[in-house]
Image (cartoon, helix red, strand yellow):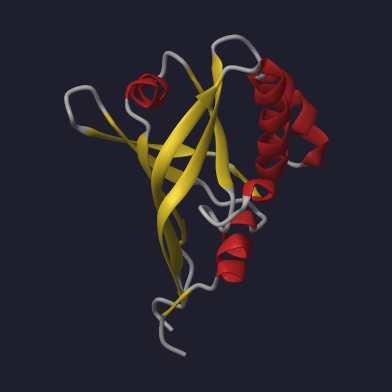
Length: 153
């Protein structure tokens, strides 16, 4: 079958795939240049609704990082997640990010994200490590999604 747009269910499965795929987040620097950095993320499907059928993409970052500074100034972002193995697939999500410094939420989501990437046995360790002052919880609410599967099939 040739490449095809992912269905909503395929997209959620793709984003929640284990082992977890790393996302590449693009933000806008103060001088207008793009900044791209890899991120670990989780999908919060509990926030799914008419304005975001898949929910929010959640990740953490430091307030003093290029991502953190850019997001505090301008919430416009793009996130690309890809499968670099044949037959290849990718999803690009554009939207606006919101930031929270609520340490309880930062800690909870840092543990969820740490568990996705490092294994459940290390989830709490990552939650404690990243649930500290100076860390931000970021929620990307997608407003435009391009998701394609079986690119080279």
